[in-house]
Image (cartoon, rainbow over all chains, first blue to last red):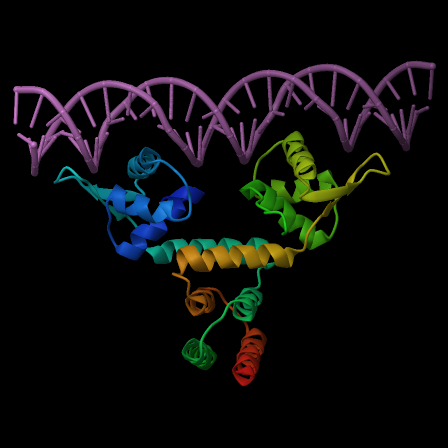
Length: 126
Length: 126
DNA sequence: ATTGTATTACGATTATATTCGTAAGCAATC
DNA sequence: GATTGCTTACGAATATAATCGTAATACAAT
């Protein structure tokens, strides 16, 4: 069974940056975080060290400045959070989530077509 | 500006039950929680009291057994969490969230049609 | 009225998360 | 080789969340 993975809020923010960049130093992560949150460098460092201990990230220590790499796929987190959200906020209804998302957040024409196609391919499978 | 509303994980679980039932006693909420989590009655009570202090719920104290009522709409929470999720887990792309949800969680035919209709009505607005 | 049962209130403990100061290492530059 | 600047390591303080035991209270049943 795969270990339960449950990053805290701050940890998730960091992971999100790492997924974006694929790999990054503490400094790089910290610079992004600072854009929205006023926090010291060592705080970010410590968080990333803890994440390393927990196995949420791995790191390349071959040079002095360590490079951090997320240790699991973004997709895994997506699946987990989407599932939890459907359950607690949408009474188990996937379509309600989808409709909320489409209704309140902009999706462009291209996106909409892609979704339609996906729906059709699901329909055809049945 | 509306107060930032940020329930903890346990609080969100409780809110989710309250939204489901519209209103409920501590006992009723506790019974649902116990189905998935082994925790004492007074823990649930305390959590709900704290939620009351914070204004997350209101309560009817007219009889000895208090009745708790969520103090804001489920929709507000949905919007907030969906937004945060799109941002941190889907690189800001609504369609990616939608596609993940449709791909991994079952939606029935009726749901799918409803979504298609919604998409078309969005398309026509442009 | 007494007893029993379910409820709330409240304090205290424990667990977890977040924050940061300080020290130590290392490399480049003066 | 001293100084400067950036890095990691680490411990400790602070903040927040979750847990539960105990006592007081209300109410119903006997």
